Each structure stands twice: as structure tokens, then as C-alpha cells.
Length: 108
Image (cartoon, rainbow, N blue to C red):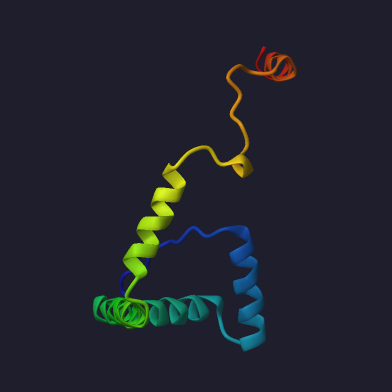
């Protein structure tokens, strides 16, 4: 390799790579290199486009099975906008006294 690069990785990942290197009986650089090559090979623009196309086809099939999907989405939105939801709680109009005390203690 004529172009060397440094790479900063989290300690936990470094520890995992050390273990993988020992298990595989290969230098850590080789393990990292192979992982990067595999990641790049599986995440090409074409492979990402193929995955997105698959997701789009899944949605289209679902829409064919459930033609009222748009109506269901609209009904959900209208229900969310209809008014207050008792399960979401009631927002405080004013900060409770105990919260003011805690904020003062924490932030001075």
C-alpha cells in the first residue's frame, strides 16, 4: 500500500477488533481492511438504489393490498389534530415551584 491513512475509532470497537484479530489469527490491519472493503462493496450507489427500489416495490404492493391506505393516514392525522390527548398529559402553564428550586440549585 503506497497511501497510508490513520483512523480514529472508539475504544470499544478497538477492543473488538483486537479480539477478532486474535480469533482470526490475522493482523488487525487486515481485519479492518477486509471490513472496509466489504462495507464499500455492499454500499455502492447501485446496491443502495436496488435496496430503495425494493422498499418502493414493497410499499406499492402494500398499497395494492390496502387501497384505503391514504384514507387511513389522513384519518390518523385528523385524529392527532382533533384536540388534546389525555394520554399525552397536560403541559404546565407555569413551572412548578419544586422544579424552580431544583433549577436554581443546579444552575445557580
